[in-house]
Amino acid sequence: MTDRPSLRLTAGPSSTRILGVGSHQPERVVTNDDLSELMDTNDQWIRERVGIIERRFGNKDELLVDFAVAAGQAALADAGVDPSEVDTVILPNCTMPSQIPNAAAQVAARIGIPSPGAFDLNAACAGFCYGLGVASDLIRAGSAKKVLVIGAEKLTDVVDPTDRANAIIFADGAGAAVVGGSDEPGIGPVVWGSAGDLVDLISMRDEKWIYQEGQSVFRWATTKIAPIAMRALEAAGLQPSDVDVLIPHQANLRIVESIAKKLRAAGAREDMVVADDIKYSGNTSSASIPLALDHMRKAGTAKPGDVVLAIGFGAGLSYAGQAFVCP
Image 1 (cartoon, rainbow, N blue to C red):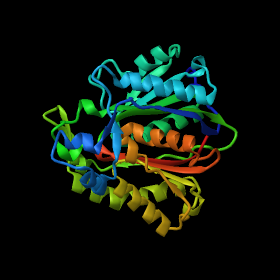
Image 2 (tube, one colour; image 1 turned 30 degrees about the horizontal axis):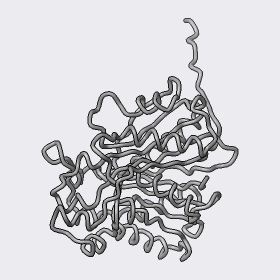
Image 3 (cartoon, rainbow, N blue to C red; image 1 turned 180 degrees about the horizontal axis):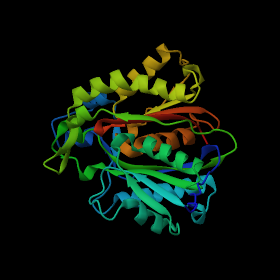
C-alpha cells in the first residue's frame, strides 16, 4: 500500500480591513418635480413615503460597467493601491443586461488589473455586504491578497417608467472598496441568510421590469433586519454602544429610521450617525452601502477609525451584514 500525497492548503493573514473606498454616479439629477411631469406623483408624496428628494439616472449610452470602472478606480486611488496589486475582483450587481460575459472581468480589464479572479455576485441589495464578506474570507484563507469589491447598478434599465411605486425609488450608481490583509481585525464576520419563502415579494415582471410588493417588503424589513444587525455585532464581539456609524441599505428612509430606532432601544448611542444617502441618491441596490460610506467620509460624518455597522437586504429575500472599521 503506497502513501498518498497530502494536499497543501493555503493560509493568509488572520485579519482584514478596508484599505480605501470610492464611488461614482451619473451626472443627470432627477428631482421629484421632474418625475411629477411623467406620472401622477408629487414632491410631498415621495418625501413622505420614501424620503427621496432627488436621484441620479444614467443616460442611454451609459453602462453599468462604466459606473463600476469609475468607482473601482476611485477606490484604488483612495487606497493607494496599484491595479497590478489586485488579484481578485468581485462585482455585486443585479442589473447586467446579459449574464454572459460577466461585468467583473470587463471592469478589471478596463481598469488595468492583470488576469485577476473575477466574478459577479447577485444578492441584489445585500450584494455589497455579501461581496465584502467573501473578499475578507478569501484573503484570510490565502486565496487572495487584495480584492476589489464593486457594487454597481443601472436600475433605470429595469424600471418601468410608468410604474409610480418603483420609478420614484430606484436609481443608478456604483460604490467600491479595496480589501486587504491587516495586523488587527478591521472587518467582522459576515452574518447572512435568506427568506426564500418570500422570494416573490421582489421579482422581475414579464422578465423585463423590477417589481416589489412595497408594503410587504416594508413590514419584513422593519421587523427582521434590526435583529440581524444585532447578530452581526455579536459575531464581531461588539455592543450596540460601540457603533459610531450605521449604514443600512438605502431602500427607504422610513426603514432606515426604524432600524436605527430599534438599535438605539437596544443600547446604541444617540449620537450614532445614521446614513441617509437615499435622500439624494435614491435606492441603488448593491451600490447603496458603499455609495453612502464614500459620501459620508467625504462629508466628515464617517471618520477613519469609526466602527461602522452595515446591513444589506433585498430581493431573494437575501440579507447580510457586518461591522468594520472605517478607512
